[in-house]
Image (cartoon, rainbow, N blue to C red):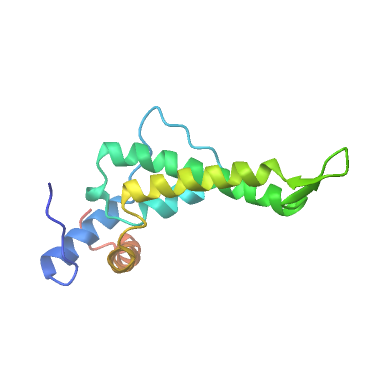
Length: 149
C-alpha cells in the first residue's frame, strides 16, 4: 500500500501540488455518469488526492455517485407527495417512495463506508482541506508563464 503524503512537509506539499495540477481522476472506462451524477462524482473524488484512487475505488465511487443522485431524486419526489398517502378505501399508509428512499439511503451509506468516506470525518476533512488548498495554488500556477509544465 502506498504511503500517504503528509501535507505539512515540503515533499508532501509539492506532491499534492503536482497531483492537483493533474486534476481529479476520470471515471473508469465503461462507467456511465449521467449529468445528474456529476456533482456527486466531483464531490467524492475531491476527498482524496489522485494517487489514492485505485481502480476498484473509482468503480465504487461511480456507484456511490449514482446512488447519491438517486437518493436526492427520491427525496425530492417524497417532498412533493408527502410521506403518507390515502388509499382508495380511505386508509392511511406509508408512501412507497418513503420505503424506496430508506432502501436507497442504506445502500448509499454502505457504499460511502466502503470508500471510507463516513468512517474518519476529522482525517477526511483535514485531507480534503489540504488538497483543496493545493488545487487553488495549482490553478494560480497554471497561469504562470515562467513555470515549466
